[in-house]
Length: 271
Picture 1: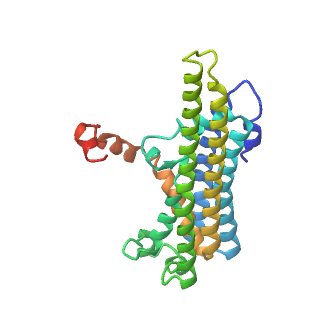
Picture 2: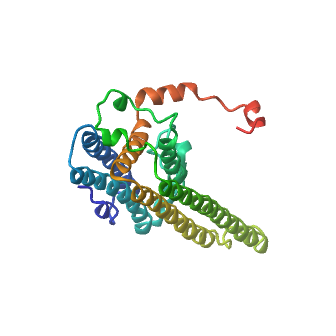
Picture 3: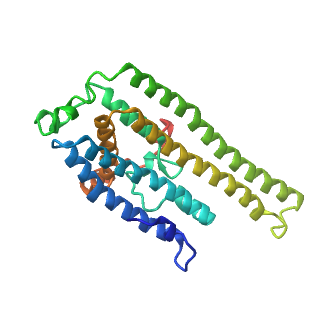
């Protein structure tokens, strides 16, 4: 069992290194233990109670990760820059990150993919590997579910821009305070209160960071809470596979090989 509280206690070892170790352990547990358990439950006749327990294990695993991110910042605010720009994420993952982790829109886009009948295709379904409850889980979703998904999406469209605006305001405030001191003290570095301005900005960024994690926790919980048992299992399975897919060495090599170099033409086209 992972023990994040012990990881971020004061020690000679930097807590950012400890969090990197925590993430590696968290990811290994996701890939090698929890996802196989859920996959097995979805691939064979099983009791609803057992399937629900595996869903809860995986759901708790995702939520506890965001709790641990918050704990890392609360324990030591110096961790914030490293968590906002995690070095342990590869080049394939980074475009999908927002304030240090998966963009919340990914969760709702993934959910929407199950409602798209043209893309709702699974080899396991066609080959009859899974029981009928799993195969039929997303056929003709209820009107109340469609309404709930719309409500979640509308909430996201309000909250994500607000987080972005708060980041911009914090950064603008930092620049303004430093610039004002620079003028007042005529560029005397000894008198310019950079540390004070930085502290104020870091406090606000830490607040935004934790609110972003709170939003991710809330969205995942709301989605799973709105779904049936088999729908929730399939959603969490897809989310886990999405994360694990970033680490696929063949996929990552292909991505690295195909990355286009930055050029004036790219910039002129807005890329």
